[in-house]
Length: 143
Image 1 (cartoon, rainbow, N blue to C red):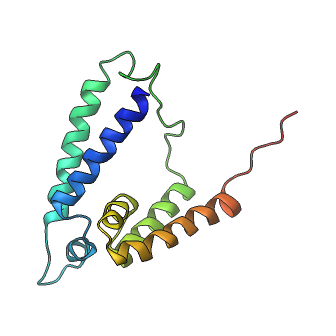
Image 2 (image 1 turned 90 degrees about the vertical axis):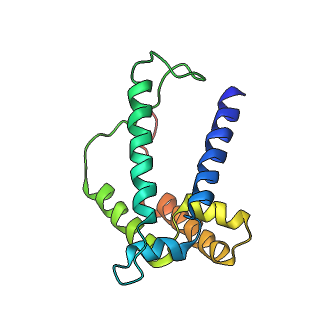
């Protein structure tokens, strides 16, 4: 139960930060990605704040033997860059640049009844389904 509550709290804090910073508005994101006279550096400030916060968080967490609400840390098994990771990042970036949304801000914007988010989210879910069905490496059969 503590894991669920801590996840809920972290998600709510993240969503509130997105809303307060204006990052749930795709026009604000696209104003950063479009380098013209309407360029808006707000996303750069949000990203810098996230990197600084993460660096501090990892410094504190790396001193602990275990997380507060679990037995051990769950870190990614892969630590190398490969074609699939870079390709996925590129597809994510193009989608973000076209729509002005990434998943977190889209979910927060949907909660504010933003029709653009309601158009984005089904496409996002479809992309996940396509990956799961067609692209995810199938596990070897168990003997």
